[in-house]
Image (cartoon, rainbow, N blue to C red):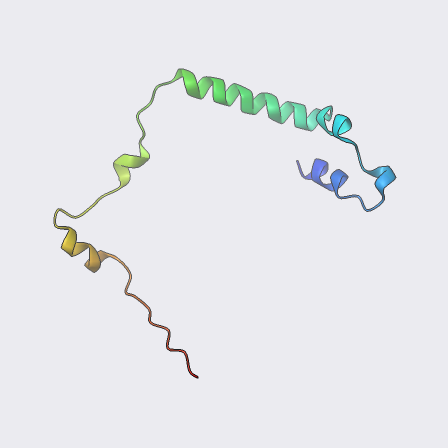
Amino acid sequence: MSEIISLMLQTNPSRRPNCDEILKNEILIRNMNLNKEYLENKNKVNQPLQLLGTIKFPRNLNEINKKLPKKKINIQEK
């Protein structure tokens, strides 16, 4: 992908690819196909959201202040 970005950042406009040339770039096509396959396979597998299972809250929400970082007070001088 860095190759495509460097092509698009050419200072000389005649060396810069147009949109059609960028979309025909082999690297971009390969990455688009990989992303398409990933999304298709991801949609086929119905896995529960595992990330939500990692979020833990204390039973008593008043105790949450013990777990959170302390508040920093910035005193501005005039």
